[in-house]
Image (cartoon, rainbow over the protein chains, first blue to last red):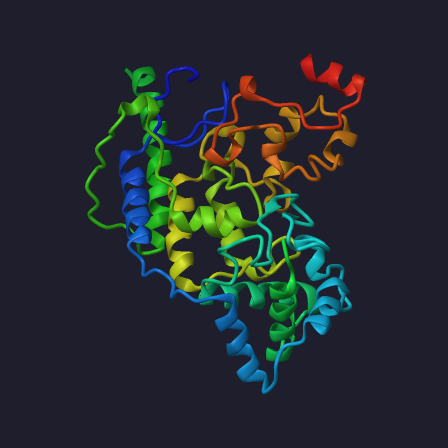
Amino acid sequence: MTEPNTSPLPIFDRGLRLGPPSLLLAGLGLALALGASGAASAAETTPAQQLQRFNQQAGGAGQADAGRSFFTRRHGGEWSCASCHGDVPTRAGQHASTGKRLDPLAPAANPRSFTDEAKVDKWFRRNCNDVLQRECTAREKADVIAYLMSLKP
Amino acid sequence: MNSVHALPLKRLARHVRSASAAALLGLIAAVPLPAQADGPRGARAPVPAAYTTECGACHTAYPPGLLPAASWQRLMGGLDRHFGTDASLDTTTLREIGPWLQAHAGTDRPVAGAPPEDRITRSAWFERKHRQIDPAVWKLPSVKSRAQCSACHQGADQGRFDDDALIEPKGLTTAQRRAWSD
């Protein structure tokens, strides 16, 4: 505990108090937070089901070797998948610009990996944009998941 | 009398400004005041789960009070190009996070002006607080960037940045360590 703090907000540290002690606005935040926790939970899925989904879209089975190559090389931009997820995705990664630790991406090392379809789609959308400056194809996604599923801890 | 009222009026004006920002987003509703379970001393603004999972996936879940409302507004409006990455969110998630940031944005003097590029780490108060840090320290593998608060501030992910809860990042030289304890 630091000095007495009448603000409902986190303080930064001594001598730099941030944010007004506004109960009304804190209440707004609380209401929003409660609303968020009541949101529908994501559909459960498995890495195998996700691989199957992209296999079907691509019209063929994802290839682990192609996935490895895709994952580790750059595609015209500054980053590859491995820039953040690491060359060994059974280990923790590190965000290439912020340094934040990232949980391992390979399902063998992270039981939550590829178990939420909305998350799978969201991160493929964002990260393919960062790495390839476009959406990934179903074939590319299938290859990457096949590669990640082939990894042992 | 004037002097007695000066401060409360100033504070009120600040709150009105924050409230206006939220009202512009169409979010003012009849919200009951929350009960403060552990009293004003330990109470903290509840953090939307989406803030921790979405923003906190790539960087420290920065306390919203570290940037002014205008900065948060710009950042949330440009997430598809967020400091060089696509951090775009669906509208439902935006609505969970955006108004909360507006409601709890910094209004006190050190934070009131938007820093260059809306970067917390370019704020004058940030520079001042970290002026003793050798530039090489930021580049250590254990630190990597100024955004990596938890390299030194153990409680950063919980919004705690007390000076006495600092840890030394791995790899400091003797000279850097000496400066550290100054």
